[in-house]
Image 1: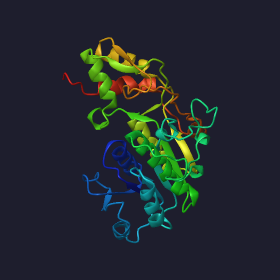
Image 2: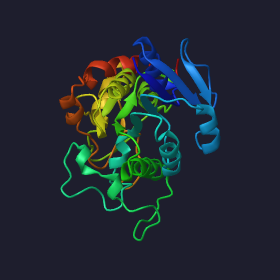
Image 3: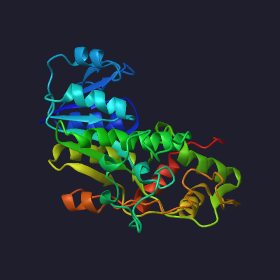
Image 4: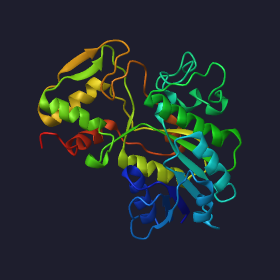
Length: 309
């Protein structure tokens, strides 16, 4: 049994993680701003993680074997957490994202040639220039803000380690029907079912996915391990947007229609004009058994709500 604190944990796979850890016999506490009651048998602390003093007050003298941080998006949040949890936890697991590798938001891109799929060693956030450094032009668009925030948050934990630290670079998480709040899979289900064209690039690239239950399982497994550093989390198999559309078409009974967008134009959520898959070899070698996208994707599509009812 471990004493686990989950920061966030009020929705989607974070909520599943909390339940899974409790059912495994762990002593689980969630810390958030009070959004929803936790499952039975789980303690809750209420605080704004951005408020360092309020966070310290909420924690009191508590210590944990593992902290799983589901909602760290900026280097400022990471800096607060690093100060507050130094000496309070034996392990810190941050839920990061495969977006940290995105060459479209990473000035200078990845090393050339970058492996495809991308390995953890392709990116060391601690070696990146700090925001605002010469030649580090900011990007105003949401994808940049999200990816760079995660990269710099990782860097804060890595540059001057206060505790054993893991960054879980998660693939695109799917499944769960309405609980999948991004609406990315629903975009395809709704458009294909309605006969509306799906916007795609002329040349399509594979990308990585993971089922929401598998993501929760992976985070709980990671909390129980001793390895440190970045680790990619992705199911086996990396379909491109056309393969995804074909899977949707098979479930909704209607052939997909496509509209090819020009270079630099926005396309549908999982259509990429650049290599965009991650390698799960490190986690597999450490002992985690990933499932296959092809096995769980039909079920994820089937449970996704359709606009036509």
